[in-house]
Amino acid sequence: MAKDHIFVGLEMGTSKVCVVVGEANADGPIKILGVGQAPSCGIRKGEIVDFENVHKCVREAIADAEDKSDVTIKSVFAGVTGSHIHSFNNRGCVNLPEDREEIDISDCEDVALSARDVNIPPQNAFLHTILQHYYVDGQEGVLNPISMLGRMLEADFHIIHGVGNRIRNTVRVIKELGIEVEDVVFNGYASAQAILNQQQKDLGALVIDIGGGTTDYVVYVDGAVQQSGSLAVGGDHITNDISMGLRIPMAKADRLKIEEGDATLGNALPGETLYLKDETGFAGREIERETLNTIINCRLGETFELLKRALEGEPYLPMLGAGIVITGGCSQMRGIGPLAQEIFGVPVNVAHAAKSTSGLIAVSENPQFSTAIGLLRYGQAAYANRPQKTGIKGLLGKLFKR
Image (cartoon, rainbow, N blue to C red; front, side, top):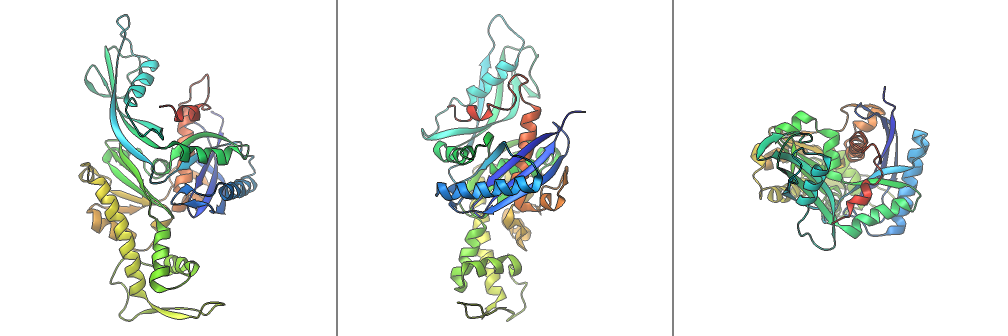
């Protein structure tokens, strides 16, 4: 039996820093050993704006995770997000030398490099080169071209890139704690690994991960990633709208959103009100429930409309046989599924990462941890596919090569 390996996923979110520690072998279920958290300070819309404060938050979350899992954390898979993340699809092509007809692993590496031989903004760095499909001498449907005979190898890839220094700042925060970064992963892609099974990917699915400051998305069609990105809007914007619209403190607005909010209009009884109790520095007041719901409906609806417009440039929405899957902390909002279904016209489910996990089930069943658990799954896949000579170390070194 293969020996289990420790994997750690670290997400620096706008609302919280989350560290999940798991144990698994190369292809088995992941056992969640512990989770550490700390409130985020110095992160806005998913991006670091105060290095020192973020450093302290990450240190606290790491210490919390080590204490709860009884594991000394030496390395992590780190998630990144932000509106600077962009993607495109491209095909790579390599011709085999005259004296060789058998395709080998170096040809597969070269075809990926060929697909990345494009101009991206000079300040940007490649984050992922995700395989979609191989072709050998024009033959479609090739799953693994290694050892096949051919003269030309082509492959389609989904390529994700972002501003290099913003990605490197995430790495620096972690490395200054004496912890290695195995790889850096786009949060939306990580979340998709946590909540989608292969059948859903094959049928076609859109994953929407709504966090505190960003909304990440990934589209799968025919088992491959076709589109991805990040919008600089999330659950904290709903809280801010409630605070401004109802003229109440942010903390009360956030609690009201979580405990009483509903994205569906018309569910409240006529004249139904909520009472906020007197507290030091705050005079109690009554709020109409339908007014609260209208604020939530407007902001969430706007977020979904923005995402729909981002997706309309490609013809993928009609190809989502498995529908839309919403996750992330904001996915727990009542009425979010029906509202998304109304806007996209596609069946919608709200999901978490409980599939093929054990240990702390309460963690895997909480959609707030989908990204962090997805980072574990990404690490597990990297470990299974690692080159035998080098291990998974060195993945990060390839990250910033143009």
